[in-house]
Image 1: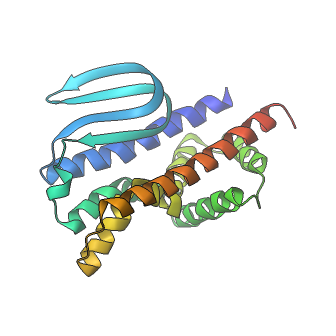
Image 2 (image 1 turned 135 degrees about the vertical axis):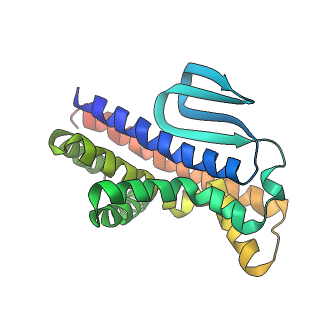
Length: 213
């Protein structure tokens, strides 16, 4: 039952992350086509205006889809703002719930995940630490920690490369140089491969953890 708390906290953290992107995009004139909370089989699919809002079984990820071409017409800094809106909302939520400790946890998340990806940290240790938090943290503290971990995982270089938007929008805003489609595709492939490696290690670590090995 203790893991139900993690699922609920993850769902709330992901919902905040997606809501920030959706709301800022609308404020900047973008048309939202779909907001999806979770992955896997859909549990809920409703229409609000022209947008679809969906909830899926596994609430550890999500996406916001804007109408084709809308975001490309925005200035570079506004595009970058949309890309980092979810991280900013997660950091703010964690700061409100945890205080200064939130920043330490965000950077610890980045450090631990990168260390795991180069095989210097056993993912089983991360699962053990997660169980300890679930067993000892009050509900609001658990939500704050989940928000901080969510922010940290999305601040890693690899997810930034996988989404491409933040990095390239910032480069364009700073230099005026517009990266070509080839570079976008290459960065996307590198980032996606690295992120899938991270998820694979976490999944293998989870199996080992639950099997007691």
